[in-house]
Length: 205
Figure (cartoon, one colour):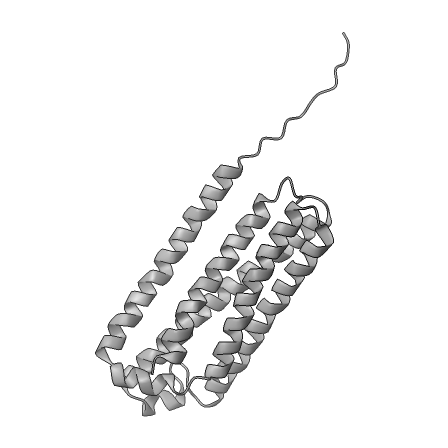
């Protein structure tokens, strides 16, 4: 009985993978969409209190974080395009920049939160008793929504770092970059959510 070399065919369902990611992103949009509706309802109830509370936030830090995320979205796109062209090194550089930008966003958010906490402005904080009900609601929503967004940033960064490892090891190539594209879709969602959070909390006075 002759030995025949076994030919292994690796089945890839790129369309299924992409559809799964879009369904996951849709559930994320539902989650934040519900929070945006809650925010709008309370803002309608406490318009003046929300304006006063928003003036305590650092608009400059919010603007810098917006620029960081928008730039990082661009570098993710450039990384995907580069990998499709088999420009592995350039793709890794672009993803590295994305990780740095995302990390800088988290550092800025840490300092912003630290300043508020230092002044007693946090749920059940000593300063909250001196604020109106509307201001308390505003800061409660601020911590929950920006905190949940920061958690999504951390997950997105982990996703991208894993992709960098796969690319470096040759497991993600120009002919097989669906996972990187999914990571890019997730990162774009994170950016889009922030584009709504930034004006709602920092700009509308």
